[in-house]
Image 1 (cartoon, helix red, strand yellow):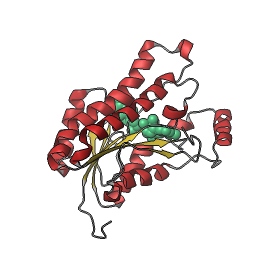
Image 2 (cartoon, protein in one colour):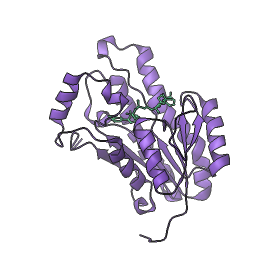
Image 3 (cartoon, helix red, strand yellow):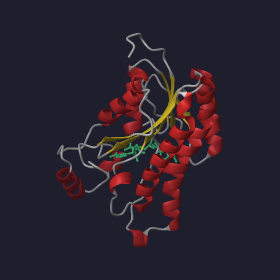
Length: 241
Ligand code: NDP
């Protein structure tokens, strides 16, 4: 562990305009890094970050966004693949379209983004990839076959990258939040929120900042020997899964 002030890094967070992604962006800014965030509108990132427009289901828009981020801040040193959606429905009612859209955003969207930043990480022999999964990817959840499949798929991505590129100074880890207080969970009914709270050993939902600080640690030099790991931030909800 070094006490020297680290050089500011070029950090890219997908879906950094609100919720967990925005908190993650604020945490990296607080630590002195150069932060770019994507949003679909190209607006709404935190002050001090560069906001670029990208839809993770559209490779061309990702190319343009990452080019702009790299021109401003240099090649991406840290990627946080955070953009994600839910489209809940019980299995019998879930359409192929719903399944494919959630997978295309959460899983393929992460793959597309990683692919566009990995070359420069390989050249530098250094890089940090953090994939935002969910306790649901490990634990399952009724009505979330599409979401659970997409989130557990991220673990396969992180572990395959770890085996492929671990010797090149690149780490790939998964952070698996439980129930975090954002628009995604505020849209749940009061009854459902209360039943979730009951199931969580910590007895509460978390603030997005509690996820952000873990992501920043996993992306730090101190975490150089952690790769292919799944780090829960769930108040104990998913223990052992
Ligand atoms: P929000 O709904 O608050 O934010 C979602 C973010 O993803 C927005 O920035 C949104 O951008 C972006 N996004 C969605 N679709 C796309 C797309 N096609 N292309 C680009 N960006 C897109 O969600 P949270 O902050 O709660 O969730 C962030 C991540 O954390 C997600 O991956 C989610 O699955 C995960 N998570 C959340 C939990 C929670 O309890 N909240 C628990 C576990 C995991 P835009 O504003 O442009 O739509």
